Image (cartoon, rainbow, N blue to C red):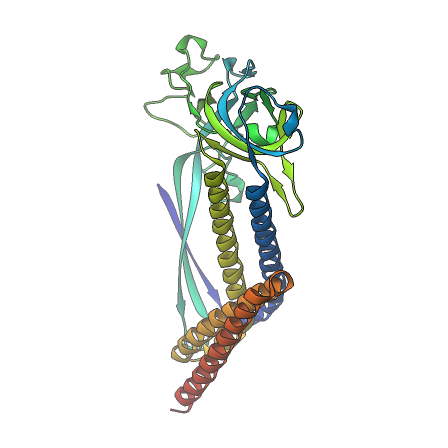
Amino acid sequence: MDSFTETTHRSWFSRLGGALTGILFGLILIVVASSLLWWNEGRAIDRTRTLDAGAEAVVAIAATPVDPANDGELVHLSGTTHTDARLRDPIFAIEVPAIRLERRVEMYQWSEQRESETVKELGGGETTRTTYSYQRTWSSQPIDSSDFRHPEGHHNPTMPYTSEQWLADRVTLGAFRLAPAFVSQINGARALPVDAEEAPTGFVSDGSGFYKGTPASPEVGDLRVSFRVVDPDGEISAIGRQQGDTLVTARLKHGTIALLEPGQVDAITMFEHAHSANALLTWGLRVGGVVALWIALALILAPLKVIADLIPMLGSLVGFATGLVSALLALATGSLVIALAWIAHRPLLGGALLVAALLFAVLGAGQWRKGARQAAANATA
């Protein structure tokens, strides 16, 4: 592993200019984060309403035969998938009967890691030592070595092949044909062994895939190619709209339903799983939105810390105070946006969230006043 270290210095005026510029990015980020939170709440509520409506309307049917009386209905069925399709990788000449064929290509490449350590100086300046480390690794994504800080001696060649997948055009579940929205959800892929005698020119094989280069001592540019396949026959359960002899995505007032799970799973359990997935996504986006607000508010308050850094110890105190205030204000702002979104859709729960937002705002204001008084006391001491 190669490594290089660089030392850079930023003056107090340079840091202040950067912090003032950061205010603009902070304001933009507040708009983006607030929009994300608002959209997420509307999405979550619509998804919940869609799933609730689906759970009330779904009809359990047999996978065979097709009953025309259920045409247009939201239906639940379990059964065995099947396809007559033979999927083929045109480059490596792999051909198998399957629902999905996946090709994974990896290349041995240089990668760059950066580690920085910053030391503050009296007068507000700072010195940063950055170490750039280069090591070789297998990656399925091309790494652009021209973006390296030290590209000399760390050149990555162009990746000649990419990872791809192929899906069967026609897949059935009992007597029903599955629309692509369902086919793409079928999982359970397994590793596909390859015949060593079928290795393309320039490649070797140990049965698990193809290799170009020297397996015992890989060099930059070496390739390894492996395959995975979803077999034609597997047991699944699905919920969608019956359209003739095809299972398609159901479109309800507030959204769509196209659920699929492996094995025999009843409709109630499938809807419970869908609700859980919706809750997980909702909270993930909420956390992401609040963190983005925290970063935005920290950018807006950053000039205060830079000004206080004229005296390093004072800068640390102000930095802690602004960080805490940014966190509390982010929680308050995020809760406010979420509350307003819920008020627009569900007023009672939205009102409770609005109270929580006001509480965080009061706590943030109190911490700000406390931090300001402490900073003033330290400055006059």
